[in-house]
Image 1 (cartoon, rainbow, N blue to C red):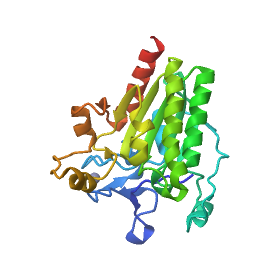
Image 2: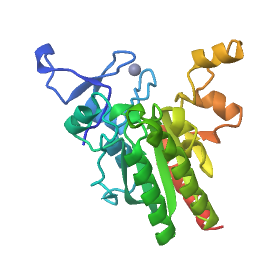
Image 3: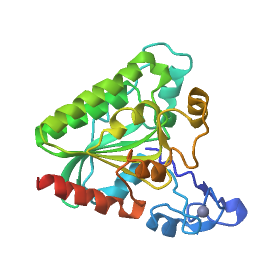
Length: 270
Ligand SMILES: [Zn+2]
């Protein structure tokens, strides 16, 4: 599994043993890898949130040793013969832009799906949609709540309209989950955009965002051209969306597990 850390490893050439030291991508601060990971991969100097791969993300929010991966055998197919797509998905180490499974958070059994931005920009294609739906259906069967962590550039153009259909498919599955009185906690991370923002990422019973995450459907330039108005400062960042009611709360990465656990407790006592 590929973990995208966005932190440049300092190589031995520069006098540091690789893997022990890392450098913040934003402020260039040299950091001990161990300290950096203990700080949830947030730079202690400038507060920059390093993007996480699914493996690290799962490690940070579920109970240690509780994660059991499901549906790992689902792989994308180049059904449209889209130029270059077949080779791209063949060479990837991880199978698609999402990892799904069962886990516990503070003792609560949950079904979880975590997106991986390092796989084709976390784009939502047929495999992402199918894995999410199977995860939700299993949650209904096992009477568990669902947590989905999103990180996506939107729908996967290499799968054409089939990728757009995943918006309806995942939304319908979430409606079924809600009918059974089970909760869906959506965690939005940087970036959550396009078709993912326009479907399951925004459909949580509670939508929680990491600080300063870019969240939105279209990019600011497209919106400015369409509405012919200048957009306000910080538009499409978590804090702005929280202030305007699009996101319920912004939670620091170090507190994320505890906050999710509180909501699980709340929804379980209903
Ligand atoms: Zn920094």
